[in-house]
Image (cartoon, rainbow, N blue to C red; front, side, top):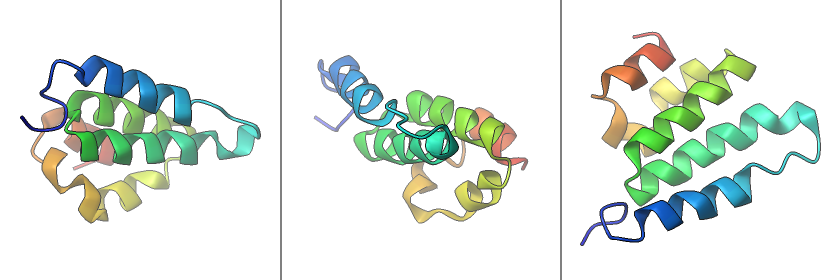
Length: 88
């Protein structure tokens, strides 16, 4: 069974949300969201990854270019929502 497709996929997402949603400094909120997107993609949680990336890009539009080039996000590049987030 692949990550994100197991019965515990929802639990994986909650773990990522718990770890990355803490923003001790509001200035790093976009980076936290971006990193959560990377983590979700690695877990096979494509929709959640795109949601996190969308939040990151809304907070810091410069992250769209970084997301478009990130090899860690290769698996989600074909999703139309991802393409909208990164402006492709």
